[in-house]
Image 1 (spheres, helix red, strand yellow):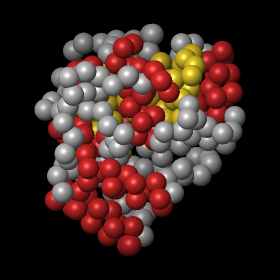
Image 2 (cartoon, helix red, strand yellow):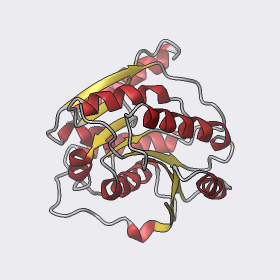
Image 3 (cartoon, helix red, strand yellow):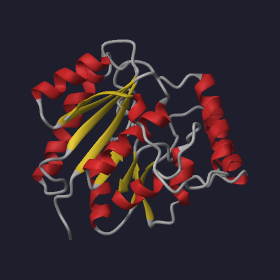
Image 4 (cartoon, helix red, strand yellow):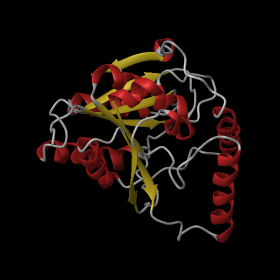
Length: 252
């Protein structure tokens, strides 16, 4: 089994000044643990992608970078939305790393599932998707609408993995293929199933948000659903789409 691949943990951030002080130490500690176990190389990074925040998110990311070289930063302006922030981080990881894992800053997705993701990658998987164990804590209405959403998305051509959002591992080949699907309306969970690469899953129990508030308002959720319907028609391009026009600062 191969060991010590360079990992970038891509963390999209938008107005997370209340959340990051609680979650950043956990990100850094878990990456160090994976390095200690040989699951990630010593030059791996936690890449915080600030998606045009209006609060002190970037100031916090800068302070984390200055205190710990394992913490890197990418500052985007203006705010382009969660999916574009994840994509920008993946494109940066494609140039700098062997593998990426995207995970939200609030750590509702269980960070400790990353070790199993890395093991499955090292055993040969190109894509590893984090999947919720259950929706037992959701209301009946939430469970019903979620199942209806996934059913309709699959009917309209967006082949989704049930209860998988944006917690996933991509190897270098998967990142390269994904970056050929560029459009103003991105729906990554509907695009990764079209890359033609071996895909597996890791299940985990979802946590409550550690701090701050969810940035997925109802209008943003409706837009994501609309983008999901459109993603089934996207075709790969011949070249990657540059994201440099939105990047204002990098910390590595």
